[in-house]
Image (cartoon, rainbow, N blue to C red):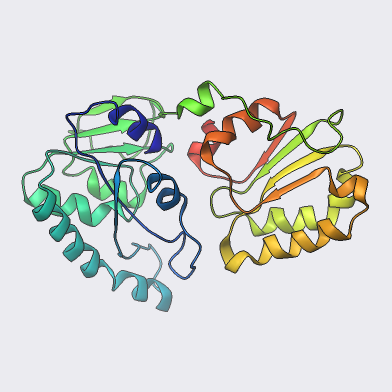
Length: 270
C-alpha cells in the first residue's frame, strides 16, 4: 500500500485517504506499521475498528467477529463523508467492511492479492470487485468470471534504489552483517533463538535485528538487557531495534550478507 501511495501522491488532482488499524494486533497497544508510516505523509489516516473472520470457532474469534458491525458503521461514515470514486484494497480483514459498503454505494473496488492463494477476506471481496490484481499467475481461488490482472507486487522506491545511510556503520565494520526481521510485529521464536545464540554470533558477525513491538516490547527489553551484559566488543556489533523506518530497509538489505526472516509476502518479495 505504501508503494502505491508513493506513486499516487504525485498526482495533485487526487485526494487520498488510508483506512487502517492504529494498533498492530487486536489485543496489543503497539502502533501498527501502516499507522506510523502513513501518518508521516500527506495522506490522511482514518482509523477503523473491525473484527477478523476466522475459519475456526472459539471464544476469541466470536469476540473479534462481534466488532464487524462497528467496522461496517465506520466504513459507512467514511464513504458518506468523503465520497470516494475508487476503493483499492489489499485483502485484509480491515478492508472487508470498507469494500462491502463501497459496493452497495456503487463505488468500484479493486483488490490486490499478495500471496499465492486468495486470503479469506479477499475471496469475499473478489466476488464483487471490478478487478483483482495478482502477484502470481497461478493464484488459486480466483472466481472464473472475474477480471484478473497480473501486476506482480508493488515495491517501494527505497527498496529498488536504496538511499545513502550510515545505518550499517557500527561495530567492527570488517565483519559481515546478518539482517534479522520477524516482520512488522516481530517473531517471538526468532527473538528467543537470537537471545540464546547472540554471544556466539557476535564474534563473527554484526547483527541488525528488528525484534518487533508486540507483547508490550517484552522481547526488546529482554534483548536490550542481554546486549548490555555482553562484552563491549560484542555488544557494539549488535544493532537492536523494535522497528525500523521503512525508507532504511532497502539500504540494510543491500548491505547485508545474509537475511533471516519470518515475515509476510511483502518482506519476502523485498
